Length: 101
Image 1 (cartoon, rainbow, N blue to C red):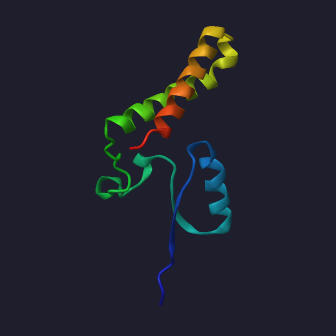
Image 2 (image 1 turned 180 degrees about the horizontal axis):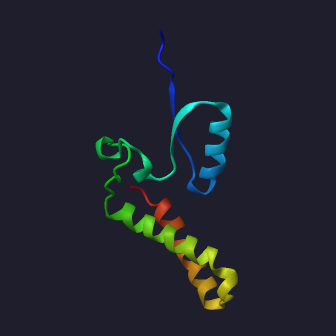
């Protein structure tokens, strides 16, 4: 007898409920991972551990986060200074991407 195949699915956290319902309707045995800590094997999994970044990688990641925050909140604040800051940060990020590593 063959054991039932267990499907492991990783999905975006905002679509987790939708994915869960679809898998349930399909009648599959599954584990849905929407956040790293929702994996039952997380303590043993090297894939879920954050990758160590060098200083340039950390700077790039922080710039991307700052730009994303400014973009998400641009309609709430409608500030010319914040828009200018976002454009300057985007330019800085582009210039960092163009430099040889």
